[in-house]
Image 1 (tube, rainbow, N blue to C red):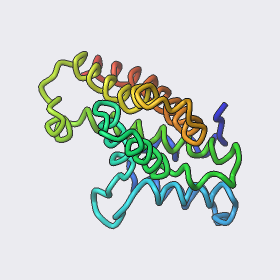
Image 2: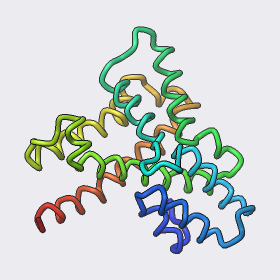
Image 3: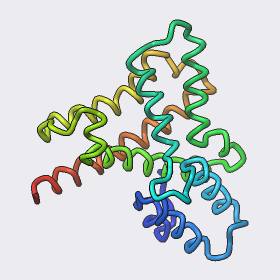
Image 4: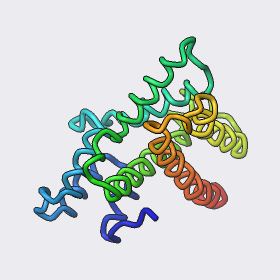
Length: 198
């Protein structure tokens, strides 16, 4: 459903922001003005900040953590939650894709999937695991924790705030949930194999 030109798969599989930036320029091949390439650049710029640093800021993480918080703790006012959800979705780039039709949703799906995949692999690193208090967890508990966090920022947000009853948010949350589920399925298989090889 969200198929892309095969040559772009390497760009969406790459998790390093610096390498992704180089791939974006290379694969655009001087055709940056094409609508799809223009949107890819805009989504890339929405995804990262401070690329001149060794460790750029991944703004998708900020929005995922906010949705995680909303999935676990409801604000006092429901309207506050809906504003935050909308802000996070637009932070991912949903506000950029309206003029691009189905192609826009496809490109955003792949950018979201990339972001969730990076988040999951980052959670497995020792430094990040220390921050999330997961460093000493056995493999299965670590996976359960990551799966639970992903579920909180997707399905729990949808059910807690009844986003399906709000047309302006329902379709966007559906796309984010789909990207997160697909990212998890791929990550789970690879992480299991990596752990078995160690």
